[in-house]
Image 1 (cartoon, rainbow, N blue to C red):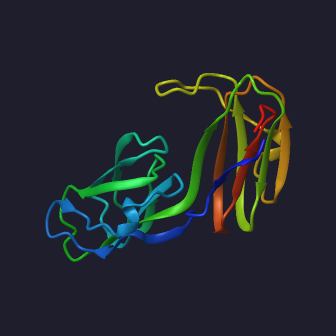
Image 2 (image 1 turned 90 degrees about the horizontal axis):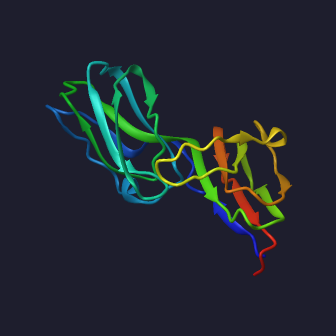
Amino acid sequence: MRPRQINFDTLADVTDFLASSQQLAAADYLVLLAAAAGKFTPQHVTLTSVSDIQTIGFTIIGRDQHGEIQTEVVTGVNNNTVASALFYTEVISIYGDAGTGANSVEAGINGIASFIYPVDPYCHGNRIMVSGTFTATYTVYWSNQKILAGETPVWVAETAQAAKTGVTGLHYDGGITAFKYDVTVFTSGAPIFSHSDQKGA
């Protein structure tokens, strides 16, 4: 079967990828850039400030890799960067619950990514490949449990693929329901995760 590819070509560690540096006169929404509405590889959203905005909570509303709406509140920082707990492929809004005064804040992404790839558990000869030109550390996981919304499958880290920095490939028999690719350190480039099986073209 011809490999199906997931190109992590929108990984980036850019602090103003979603919103340029700006001030809030009062509780309000950040003005987002066009990139926020684009579909990017699911990764953490970051908030960065060179000043003290620790008393402000920022509500992020966006979509996960399945297109489902998700939301969380991220507390501001003091001359630092903080990342969301969830992974987003699109950001709809970021709302600050108080003004920043003379202080500024910007929103971006950090290249720390997670993507779940479902496969047919009845297929044999599952093969995964990681290729491309990139500098990143990633781990490949697999599960043989349900991965539907609301489920909490157990993910097993593939030992040979834990904290990898190079290009590689692995072969699996049937019974697997999904693979998960986690990028835990990103510097540059675009990892390409490919999957193929023996089900036929």
